[in-house]
Structure formats: structure tokens, C-alpha cells
Image 1 (cartoon, helix red, strand yellow):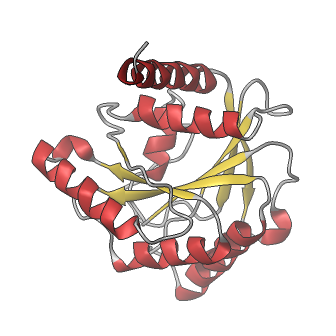
Image 2 (cartoon, rainbow, N blue to C red; image 1 turned 180 degrees about the vertical axis):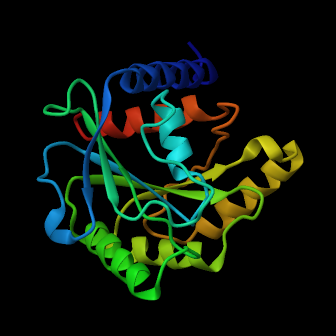
Length: 225
């Protein structure tokens, strides 16, 4: 098998592993609005971060083939806690935990409440040894905004691995997607904690979900999961 064929087979195997990983049970586990409320570490974790209304909850629902696992809303700031979900085979013995983080940027909430969310989010990122990677969702139509750059700076300082996921690709032209990928990779080039690959998704049409599931499966395999 030549190198190109081997690469294609590896990609297929990862996608297959990802599908198997996400086809299992996935249940809401815990909501933490304070660092003292974080659940005990019991499994590897991946987190989803992004600006308010970027589509985090919709992506989690799409990844897990569910419609209402994570609450979705057109109101920015609806996710007001660190919401933990246990991914197969049971909530007591999950292979992986998914964490839906409060959206940053504009939110329909008071400054005090936003500050409290931010403190919890920062504390979680800096001190959670089970956290394998943060998937930072960026609206593909608009690219990286100042609030996104602040989040990437925080992740770099905390030395937490992160990967960019471009959302809402279904409302973009192919040329726009290609340009946005190139622009994003260029912005990540000198960032020490950034994973140098971008995943392009559409929760509405399902585009890129197998690639994202495969990326998670590969990450879990690399960490012995």
C-alpha cells in the first residue's frame, strides 16, 4: 500500500472509530456554576467553547445524533454553566465526557453573571487534568473575532490543547470556506497550544461531523482511552 492509500485508509478507520464512539449512550451528567461543583474526575474530557450563539449546543446534539441532549436557543448566553455529558457505555463508566461551556462575548445577562461564568471557565481550563482538548467553535462566515483571540490567548497561557472548528459551512461558498481555512491556519501558526488542523462543519447538514468524530476518536486513542 502506497503512502496516499495508507493515509486514506487511516482516515477511514478514524471516521469509523468516531462513529462507533458517538453511537453509544450519551447522557447529561452534571452542571457546574462554581468550581466547587465540578464533578470528580472519572474519564477523559473534551470541551466545546465559542462565542454566544455560535452553535455549540447544536453541534453537540448533531455529534451525538440527538436533538435535545444539549439545550439550544436563539438567545445568546443560554448556556450558563459547565454542562457535562457522559458518552457511553454508561454514565457511571463513560469512555469520554463532553463539556458544553458558557458562550463568551455578548450574552443576555448581567456583567456580574458574565464575570462569574468567566471565572469558572478559566478555573476549569487551568486546573482540569482530565481535559484532553478544547474545540473552539468559530462562525465560518465571520472568522476569528477579538473575543475568540482572547480565548485562544487564555488557552495558550493555560497550555491546554485546542482545535478550531468552523461552523455554519452550509451557508458559505466553497471558495469562502477555503479562504477561511487558510486565514485561520495562518492565525494559529505561532500559537503553542493550537492543533494545526481545522475542521469545517455544518450541524444543519451534517458536513464535517465524521471528521470531528474521527479527531476525537484519535485523541482518545492517543491518550489510552
